[in-house]
Image 1 (cartoon, rainbow, N blue to C red):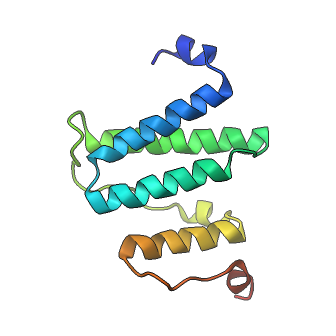
Image 2 (image 1 turned 180 degrees about the horizontal axis):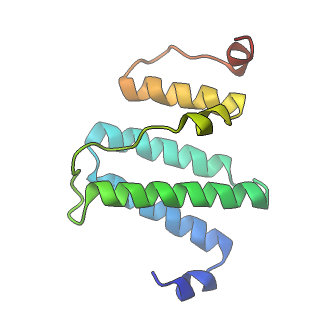
Length: 127
């Protein structure tokens, strides 16, 4: 989509477009990753419905970067070309809030198929 057209969209329209683009990209993922990714995307977009403008800008930037990365990794035919994902930057992880660390940990457990082993923000603070 051209930059001119994107600038004509309202913020909710841009959010909806990004959301639908990500779900469409997930069609190229293996079934178990698609289900995990779709659920995570839905949850994240719901959580940020009422965020402040600064958080919204950061949210949109990071999800657009994710969509770009997935597009490159899936290629034109929508089939994975090698490994999916990318390593987390340690500096970025250290900047996460406690609840984000908990969420990241729970996502890792879900990705590895380890259900039920959850931690809370209090567990993170006590370390």
